[in-house]
Image 1 (cartoon, one colour):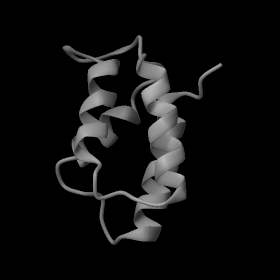
Image 2 (cartoon, one colour; image 1 turned 30 degrees about the horizontal axis):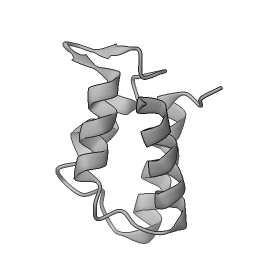
Image 3 (cartoon, rainbow, N blue to C red; image 1 turned 45 degrees about the horizontal axis):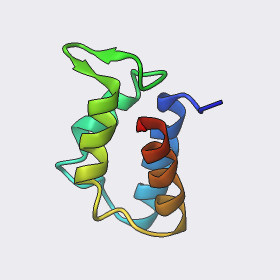
Length: 80
C-alpha cells in the first residue's frame, strides 16, 4: 500500500529544508499541492494528482541525497 501524498510531501519538505535553505522555486507549487492529496488517483482542482507528482519530479532536480532518491523512486512507482 502506498503512503498518502500529504505524508510524502511532509517528508520531502523536511529533508529538503535540512539539505538546502529553501525548496526549489519551480517545485514548490507542486509540493504545496501534494499536501492536499491522498493518492495519485485524486484531483487537485483541475489537475490530476498524478500530473502534480510528475511535475514535481520534473522540477525537483536540485533536491539530492539518499532520502531524495528513495522518495523520488517511491513517487515514480506510484505514477506507473
